[in-house]
Image (cartoon, rainbow, N blue to C red; front, side, top):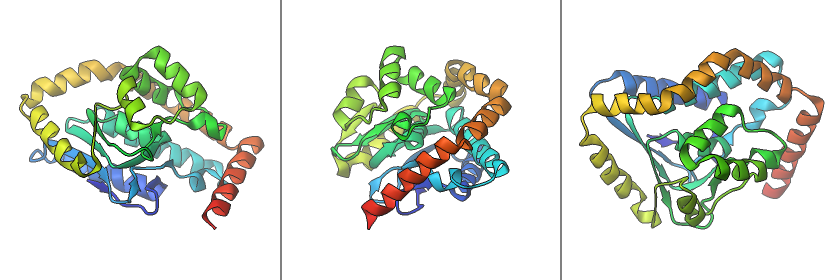
Length: 243
């Protein structure tokens, strides 16, 4: 499955909705056992949440948007399918979250292809379930440091800390992802799926219990004047960089 929402595969509401529906279809079609997630946009896997969806909109829109972000993670994190992330570009913030939600991560060896949950750099806080997903991958102390500093890891650093499983030359990302997929497919589905559920269900249940409260927290946080101003400044700076 190739993400194609140029220029940077940001997770707009429309893109999120399409992605969720596509994943549901694959999940429900028993002829599919695994999916490789990758990008069709050069140099970027996904830049994460679409700031345009969080800036200058009404409260109902913020709530709808955040519910879709939650839904995507729930679809990915407990999917019955084998999910392999073929990360062929930069993967900050929610782009990183998507790859962390997969079963295995292969990252292209390019210093520009940084990965991490860098929310604090934008003056926002990674939600608890982003944090839980990272803790489950790289451990508590490494997560604490990465989240507070908003670190973006180079491929070598990401491999060292355990954020990705393999770093390979750019032209080998797809072939490596497919050979990894074959290895995971060799395991009987029911045993693998039950094991995955055992490992991940508590993390998912934590969000499901708090889902409405998490939406309310997001809406009240994102609609604050100070947060809206800092997002507008960030978007303005981005536009200036482009021009």
